[in-house]
Amino acid sequence: MPSDAKRRRRAQNQPKPAPYVKPELPESHPRQSEFSFDVGTRLEGTHARTGTIHTPHGDIATPAFITVGTKATVKAVTPEQVEDTNAQAVLSNAYHLYLQPGPDVLDAAGGLGSFMGWHGPTFTDSGGFQVMSLGSGFKKVIDMNGPGAPGVDAQAGGDDAVAPGKERLANVDDDGVWFKSHLNGDKHRFSPEVSMGVQHKIGADIMFAFDELTTLYNSRGYQEEALERTRRWAERCILEHFRLTDEREGKPYQALFGVIQGAQYEDLRRKACSDLSEMPFDGFGIGGALEKENLGTIVGWCAEVLPENKPRHLLGISEPDDIFAAIEAGADTFDCVSPTRVARNSAFYTDHGRFNLAGRRYKTDFTPLQEGCDCYTCTHYTRAYVHHLYKADELLSHTLISIHNIAFTVRLVDRARAAIEDATFFQLKEDVLAKYYAGTGDPQGR
Image (cartoon, rainbow, N blue to C red; front, side, top):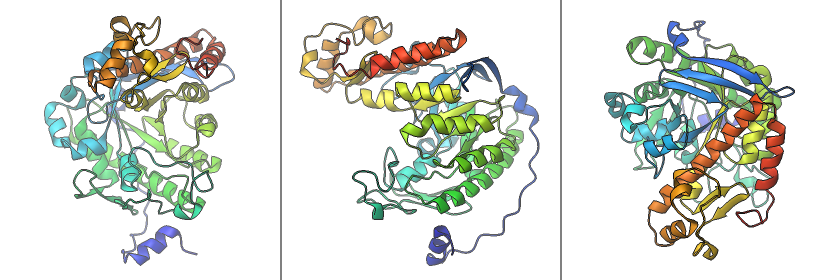
């Protein structure tokens, strides 16, 4: 039986792709020595470890939370304010920067860091997530519940899943992806070569290979097909990356991470890790469809196969239980938009959980967002003041809560890193999660 993708291609009268010819990949590039990763302390009985990523724009002590600045800005927060939270690096998105202001603008500015006034290390993701998630109409996130979950129509999913009431704006083939801009509907083409060209011009220290994102709606057969397509795209990314590295001599070296897909299938995840480990990547990103409860297990599978001397980045987590699970399973860095996204809806983090400043009880609460927090917001302002800003639709509330939430998340990961060093990781994990998820309903834990 032909695969779903082959049936779709025939139905759309698309030409059959040329036969695959495996390219000869070089073992390495001479300039890869400009990027390195040193493993520090390992936590016995786990894959957790400390380390240091060395980039042309500074070092990153790991484990580390990488703050997201999607469009070359951390929303509502200046680069100087981000630096004050002790964040070590910022991640921006190739898809959004490609559409606006365009990679040529960033290249002319001297790269992402120079353009946005950030002096530390930078990351860009490949744009694959946004091409497929926005292309399927799911906006910020793709529904990862899958068929059979409560409230999900099993007949509405499948390999062509599109959000209810939305039009598919992206179509993948073996060469790349056609997609329509979510800004104005213009049609664009992303391929491994295009993604590499865009990311080289953006100029981040760490970038990711172009991959095909799948969801839990997709069948096992399609997961296999997408995994093979991602593997072939990875080969093309490496060849184009090395070519552009030679062509753009004089620019700081940019590290390229391969992306591990495979959804929740152990054999597919391990195969992806094995396949990409044979390629000359500088590190690896762990992405794709997974359910929260399986996060640690899946990262652990990858850590068992991926090379020890290369960093592992987990794409898109920030909740305390996910952070500890990811670190324990072997993730070195991870990113998420959540700290600033929830801040814009008045949510702030404390040791005793997440709370919303929109509540009436904060109108005359003249304490900081969290007692003992040394972030700029907590040392200068009260809950009552930030509550007033939010209720008055003053944008300063977004800034002040975002500063605190970033600082909270960065500090939590810093504490986890220190706990690996002094062998108190499990005690810290128990203490932090017991407080955060106690459900007292009070920011003071009463």
